[in-house]
Picture 1 (cartoon, rainbow, N blue to C red):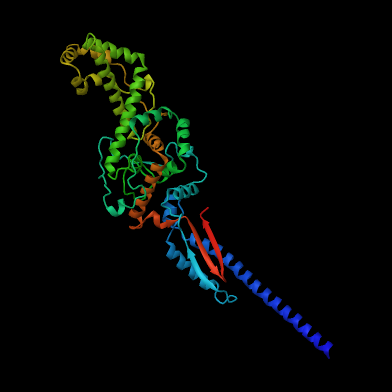
Picture 2 (cartoon, one colour):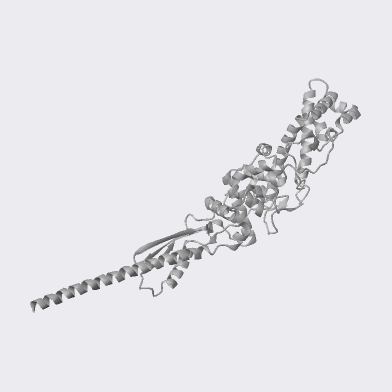
Length: 431
């Protein structure tokens, strides 16, 4: 009896042990299944949130981002969680918690990543010559026929990504850039360091001479805004025009002094109307006025979407010296005696000044778009990027959503799920 009782006790102990092992295995299996399902559903919900990208941002600017905030995304995740885990193995689900910090589209680093993703594979050479852009013919370059727009609403200005960040490009800086971009290869080399930003400008934004598409744009002069950063549309246009004139004037003056025929002509005329030591000052007056007149002609060409050689050869010069000598600007700078001699020796002087007149459409050189690309490329990376972000926010407000704000759009998602005492973390972004 004792032996039989001991055997029963031993069997009971073994059976209990097996039962406990089986129960433990079931518990472990349940936790593993719940964990596995959480991992599977979490990755799926990541994609579900990212799939809600704004179609207008994608269509207009090739940028993927979705609208939301921590609370809204958390509510969506909890709805997904409740539906997906209903009645599944008695899992103890505490819920999901989203944290989108660090994925704001308004963060320049995130915007730059989104931009590179949208324009992946495009080279700087693709934007040379303004592929696909349309000549606007707004005016002759002297006036501003469209009504200038000024952004003054504080709701708009206070939320711009740039927050009024300063910085521009001087005419002197443009001159130096232009010297190294005299041909297509030189320009491509300069633009290659600007990432996708210049390509975005070319594809999506207008300037005073060319347009990118038929969509609505609040500002007429968007490239000019990137370069100058003023919320007054016309002031941006005027400021860029001044810089173009300064650059062309400097380049034309350099080309003029490299031409011995023109220099000899200037010296001869200066000695004729201002004999003696003061003739040197007259030479400078005539040379500067001639370069300025040539520069005005250059701007006329640029505003008609024509090309202008960077450093001109004698054959590419377009203006006559007699037009310079007949201008009030030159006469005002001459002393009384020189003005009198200019009138007295009119025929002699103007016979010396004639003989240079060519009107040619040049195949090589830079057009308006390319001069502005040089200016935009000369800006600091931060200033250029922030002002492009401004334009996107302004146009998205103007076209689609009056309350559009980049800081409310996200390029990635991060959240945590608490299930059966375990924490499951998930994170994903557009790739």
